[in-house]
Length: 396
Length: 123
Ligand code: FES
Image 1 (cartoon, each protein chain N blue to C red):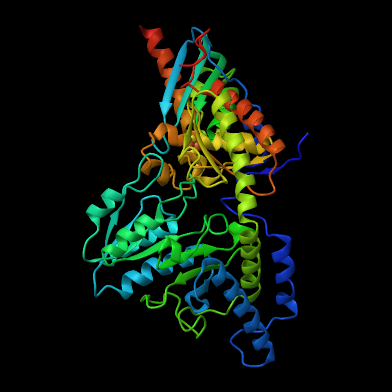
Image 2: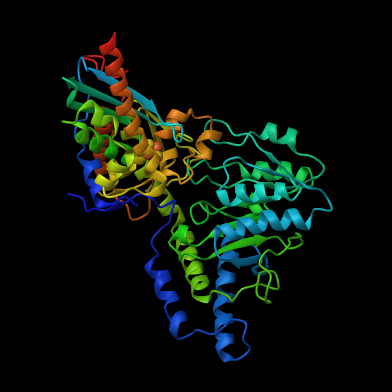
């Protein structure tokens, strides 16, 4: 019998890895200095932050002075979008963004619109891939920034960032990518990707919460959004979160070290899960790409005739933690904007469940979960007015 | 978010299914989130002797369907018409604020089923 609870929500957050935890611990009580102080306590803190910055810079192939620590992915996203749009407003007030970005981007884009910026949305196909030809038609001389996530958090689509960046650059625009879901999982070499800015987050890669980073290529003009002290080379005020930075760098180091191994392993879990669900559960749709160009962790399904939140809690009762993109499970009672952008009919978005796997999950857990899903789906369908069992024709 | 009572009822809902040749059937949809609830009533001498439901919706919608159908059993048609979603929610020990609209669905479905019964009776 497998041990429950089983955690299949790694796209939401991951547990802190032991290595990062150990490395962080002294920085709470012993090495507690303010990295802004000039005395020995401060110098010790600075040393730790410098090392962390060097380590992450090496992984993403940038200079240490191109990497800025933030309070997380949301702040990094906000900063990139707002900061670049505002700092380059003299050149143009047009920004292009994908419709399946994280809310940290989409809500910020809406706010910019109110400030007089014009936002255009890329088109994505039914698997979530950006339509490059369409992008070429909407990019303009006054477009200052093109934003597209490296990998989508809901349906796992890995976007052709290199190609998108090329279109942006050919037009003289800057390119930002949100790599919150991708960092530590895919190769995130900023030179290879050709991006000018890239956001990352600690807690998605077995690092601590409350820490992230923004890569800003030297020479790119960005306005600060957190104004205050002299931290982060005058660009981002706020006392440096030394323990979190240390933990983030260590978690990133481990993730990068084990990247290929984990990629292969987590893909094997995902593929087994996807294959079994598609084969054994009727009336189910896999959202996002089949297997190629899909995040190893992600399996997102729509179960027809039933509602996602009730599936989520059925699985929860059986000890399996997942998330749902259904209207009923969102605070706003709106279905997931990602599924809508993929053109999913509302009924199907309603029955959506995201499973996201991690390096500690096992094949036994996958098998157990498939059985639980089958049972839960059957039970809820028996309750659904949209679903009728009729003799031999079991489903309508 | 949900209390234990709600989760309990959601886990083992009562009165799931349809009643063949029901005396009253009420089907309602929820504009807020697109959910659907269907309630079937068996009524003898204006007393509800059986109630069943089918619901496409969240855990709160399923729990309130179960509880509401339990509550109306044995009620007269008059009494059942007065059943409010508030009483159903109280019986469940409360629902999160953003889930109150799901309980309205149960109230409306029962009203509709009774209306259906009354109009059939008149015909
Ligand atoms: S039925 Fe949609 S939120 Fe309850």
